[in-house]
Length: 337
Image (cartoon, rainbow, N blue to C red; front, side, top):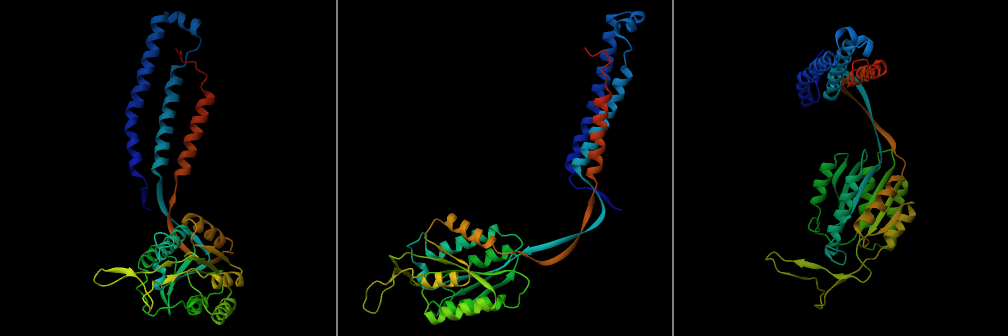
C-alpha cells in the first residue's frame, strides 16, 4: 500500500515540536526552582501538598502528541484506494439562438446578439450535471454543438456565435425547433428543454409544426424575446470597414421590431415560460434558471471512480480524545504560579 500526504505543506508545522519540548522543560525547571526558593524541602509538602511536577511533564507530552496528530490530520494521510459511485442527475438543454442580421440591432444593449450570448453564458455557468447542446438558425437551422456536460466547450462554441454564421436570412423557428428536437428525440430518461432566443415572428403553420414536434418528444420550451416593440435600425458593416444602417429598395432605413407572439405561443404550448430579453440581464438569467430548475432531474448515468482512502478522521479523533482526557485529569497540583 502506498502512503502519501495530500497537503504536505502542513507538515512544516512539525518544526514547532522542538519549541514545545523546550517550553515544557523550561517551565518544569522554572516551577521547580520557584518551589525550592520558596520553601525548604522539608516544608514543601506541608505547604504545597503533593506537588505533581511529573504530571506536568506527562500532560505536556500528551499535548505534544496531540499536536502531532492534528498536524497529520491537516496534511491528510492517504493510502490505498476505495471505489466510489458517482451519479449524475440533470436535464438535457438545447440552446437555440437566432443569428439573423436583425439580431445586430442595438435596441437592447450592447446588441441583441451580444446580450443573447451573455444570458446563455450566465445560465451555463450556473448549471451542474445537466447536458447542453447548441443550435443556431436564421433562414435555416444548424447544430453547432452536440449534447455534452463539457461546459468549457459550450462556452467556446457560444463565443463563436454571431450573425455571420448563416447567409440564408429569415427566422425559421420551426426548422430550429426541429433541429433541436432531433438532438433530444432519442433520450427517454431525463427531462428535456429548449431555450429559444430570438426576435422574430414565424407563420402560424410553422409554429403549429414546432409545437407538434416538441410535444411528440416531451420537450419544454423556454423562449426569450430580444429587442423592443419600438424597434431599431440594423447596423451593417461592409468589408472595407464602412458601416451604415440596412436600407430597403427605396433607400429607407429598415427598422426591426420584436415580434414575440410566436415565442410566447411556443412557451405556453409546451408548459414552459416566456421572458422579455429587454429586462436587465441578471433578472432574465435568474428567472430563466429558476424555471429550468423546476424540471424534474433524473438520474442519467452512474460512473465509478477509484479514490485514495483518507485517514485524517482517525488521527483527529485520537488527538481530541487525548486533549479531553488531559483536561479532565489535570487537577493543577504542579505549583501553578
